[in-house]
Structures are given as C-alpha cells and as structure tokens.
Length: 249
Length: 278
Image (cartoon, rainbow over all chains, first blue to last red; front, side, top):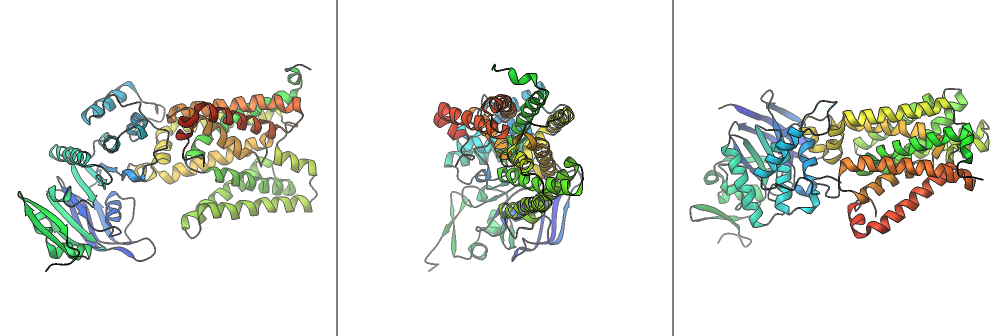
C-alpha cells in the first residue's frame, strides 16, 4: 500500500511548551483515520503538519510527490459576515488562468453538479450565512471536493452540528472513502463519529495509540488519552464510550 | 455662479479627475482593507507616508519616490513586528506610524516648511495638481485593476480563508505583500487630494456602503469603486462652491451617503456589515 503522508518522529512547539512530541504516523492510500484527544491535545496541530502549513520543530514530514490535499476547516473559524455566496466559496479554490479569473460556463456547470450531489442544488447564489449548519458544512466540503483531492483532511467536521447533520456528514464521508478518497479527520465525538471509522489515533501531546476501534477504544488507552477514567460498553455490536466521573468501582 | 463654473479652470479639472480616480481606487482597494480588518493599517500608513513626504522635502528627493519607499518600509516593518507575535499588529502600527508622523512634523518645524503646505498635506488640496499627476493616478488605477483581475481568486481566497488558501497552494504571504503594496501606492498617489488625516475614511466608507447593499464579493468590487468615484467627483464640486478643503468635502459626502444607506437598508444592511460596524 502506498503511503500518502508519513510523519517521522515529529515534534512541534509554537515557541512555548511542546504541543506534539515524537509522533510517528503513516497515512496510507485508502486511509479513513480519526484523530481523537482532549482539547489542546495537539489534534489540529497534527492535521496542520499533515497539510504542510506548519513545519515541525523536529522530525520530518514526507508527502507523496504531487499529492492533491484538500482541507475542510472547523466551521466555527469561518467569517460568516464575509460577503460571499455559495458558488463563490466553491469556485475560489479552483485553479484558473491569470487572464480568466471570473468563472466560466463549464466551471459553473461543474459547481452546480457538485452542489446537486451534496444536496445543495439551487443554493448557488445564497449567502453562506443563510444556510443551516449541515448545509454550511457541505459548502466547505464542496469547495474541497472541487479540487478532486486524493487526501481529504477535516478538522472537527461534526462540531456544533445536530444529530441529523452528523449522520449526513458521516454518510457523505463514508461514500467519499468508498469512492477512493483517503480521509483524515479530527473529532471530539467518539461515539457519533470516531467509533464508526476503521482506524483511530489517540493523541495527547504524544501519539498514545493507533488502531481499529476494538484495539484503541479501551479503558486504559482512553484514560491515558483523556486523563480521566472512562468506560467502554458494547451495544448492538458497537462500542460506546462513557465517562465515569466517580471512577470504576 | 453655475454648478459647472469651476470646470473652466485647469487646476480644478485636474483635481476633479484625480479625486474621481482616487475615490474609485480607494473604493476598490478598500474592499480588501475592510474585509481583512486592515482599516487601522490604512490610517497608520497614511500618517507614516506623511513622515516620508517631509523627509523627502528636506532631503530634496522626489516626493513619490521618498514617501513611497518610506511607506513601504513602514508597512514591511509593521508586518515583521506583528509576525514576531510579541506585540499585536495594532500596537505595532500605533508605534511605527505615529513615530513616523511625529518625525515628519519635527522635520517640517526644523526646516521651516510652510504651514500652508503642511495643512494641504494633512487635509487635502486641489491646488497644484498637475496633468502629469492625473496621468500617474490613472496609471495607478489601471495597475490596481490589472492586479485585482489577475489575482482575483487568490486574493479572495487569501482574504476569506488564509489557512485553507495556504494548503491549497496560494502563496498567502505574497498576496498579503501585494495588498500592502497596492495600499501604500494608493495612499501615496491619492493623499494630496484627500489629505493624510482623511484618506482612511475614503478607504473604508465606500467599501462599508457596498457591503450594506450586497452579499456578493464580486458585486462589492463593483459598487465600492462606483461609490468612491461618485463621492470624489461630487465632493470636489462641493469643495469649490462651499470653499472648504477637498478632503473634508469628499469625506463628509461619503459619510452622508453612509448614513442614508445605513438608514434605508435597515436591519438587513446592518446585518450584512455586522463585522465592520461596531
């Protein structure tokens, strides 16, 4: 299996304490990886190192030559007052000749098809603020998909969305993965998202464990990751993680 | 006295053309300035360029060359200090540009530049605008439109979402430098007519007016220059008839248009410009 990105012994700090330390992680072609960990554990830093917009203070990041990566940021970071329509968001990421920056008919057609596929047909001229949380998330997904990426990186794709939207996002990502796109995402949502993925990485300043949900979602790994006692139950063939504030008896 | 009386004078025709072009250019560049929350940089850079203008006069260097280099140097210093992260960009602008402004004032005091000349730089004057300067401002306008047309998507991406733009292959640092260069050149070539103290208003007001009436970035890039050009042109005529400085007339007119649009567009307009009007 070809590796798309390889983090080889990377550490990173923003000038203060080390945020990530000696991380070794490989993202192979066809990966569908969820990165979990508490707030401030270095999940977003890890994603930014994969993306290449951060350089590690130690170690090496190797990306396959010519790898097409697309990134979907947290919707909380978007400036919703910015004067921009749905089609303008999707088109901004498209490459264009310097003399033809305005959208062409074929580009608009492609954007319409993409928005149709994501259930956003007819929303091209709407301002992004006028959409629901799930629709907003899909607009940024459409912008990423317009680049036809081989590796799609998403930061907290289900953060701040309702249950229905979360299901939509999970199904969309699963379909994308089935169609051949490798996916890496960070999430706080262990039960709603991470437990459904084939591979999970637990991070808290260091890489604590990587593996299938059955290998990783154990009380000991989760306690090391989150620094608090957690219980893992099985329900209908699925693993369910609960925190146990009083500790295990 | 008729409305068109001042057009018989060449100095007024030159001033009128420069004010109209200045309004359009400031409106266009102002879209990026307000959407990137760089209004304070525009304000600071104009002050900084005043220091450069005074130093150029003392050293006998060409105004545009001296003040332009000074302004660009200030912009780069602001960027460098802010990137180091020890102090915020607003504090860096406050220190660097006001120090430059103060130096300009001190040089003017020591070397005895005429008070009237300083007033003209601070508040704008239509006197002494040459045909060559009209051509120079027109060239700046053409260059600005060319740059924005050629880098439309990259500038938009870097303005809206710099982190993702960076990942997508847009050189965000280069786009920021390009914007700073456009801003410095715009201020340099338009400050004579509008004045150092008032130019930031011409950068901000047309863009905010445009934001209140549209939700589309592309339409904002058309509306803001039109509003700026109209304010520049009509403001010049008002300036002549009311015998007030050109900068004051243009900015007061822009403020009046802002109040009208703010009132007419109501809650929708205020919602659109939510991040800009506090």
